[in-house]
Amino acid sequence: MNGRLACGRPLVVRFASEKQLVEAAAHPPKAVGEGNKSSIAGSSLGQMSRTAKIAAIKNKLKAMEEESSSMKKPRQADGFI
Image 1: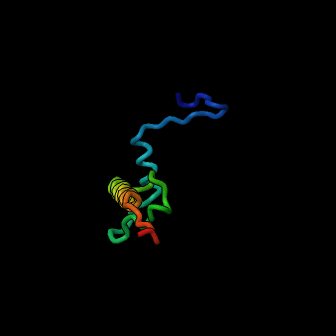
Image 2: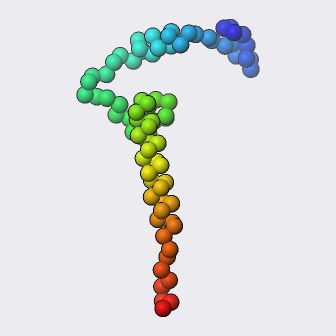
């Protein structure tokens, strides 16, 4: 598949281990205190760690549950006694 044309553009095929080596060389490891400082809203999910993705999904589900429970509460009629 490497070098074949797809939609007029040549395909480049690499082993997954090659990609990791290229990325590791391009992005040196961060200091221990830095961690992943990117916010959920400011970065795509592909750039987040697995635990950060899980935490983001849990937070979103919790917010959706709170929103749906607040909408299910019956409203009191104002002025109708």
